[in-house]
Length: 288
Image (cartoon, rainbow, N blue to C red; front, side, top):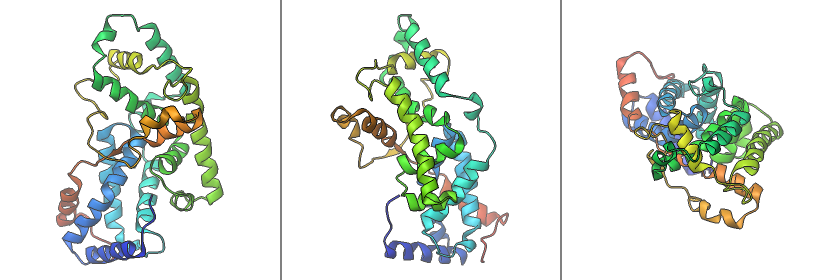
């Protein structure tokens, strides 16, 4: 999370105060400011975009209806991330978590895909977008192999760029405990990628195409309904990182592969949804 200037924080505080007074334009500005980060956190925790949309809606309701509790003692984005993280840590199991993925499961899928590589069904899955979907989904699947606490720390610190002090505040930990949790999660992902990923370790065979075929065969991926390859994204400053992988050592390659996960854009429905919610009278802004 980039460090915000005092003027930006002052502007956010002003928008919060105006929203509590009923200013719909200020409410819209706040939702637009935070919706992508909330959705990005949710889709990486939950994998399925529809589940991430539902979670984002629920988190936005909590943020908007609790604006009266924001006292400016922390940065506004940190406060929002804390609400989002608490929600995602305590919500009931999502459908992807019910798959009970483990790193061992992922290894078995790689082996099964390799065995099936010569079968006719492989040709059907060689479409470029399906292979790209597999590459992007790989990080999401591996994240699901981590317990929620480790998964959230990796998403915040490794993918979304949250600094240690902010991550600790978001998760209610000491900075040292946060760094330790992040390190444990990152090591588990890195160990797997160094052992199995051809992009990370040049001694490994690339399994993206064989895994694409297997995921289509098992209906884990629907070529007509891709989650990630066609998902609207914001460009990242490190979006060229894939071209640099050849110049890095294995551990750095693994970290870059995880970190270069796209910045997904939230569907453009949340602003109007929040407006309708407040207009309905079902929820009121605290402090109004």
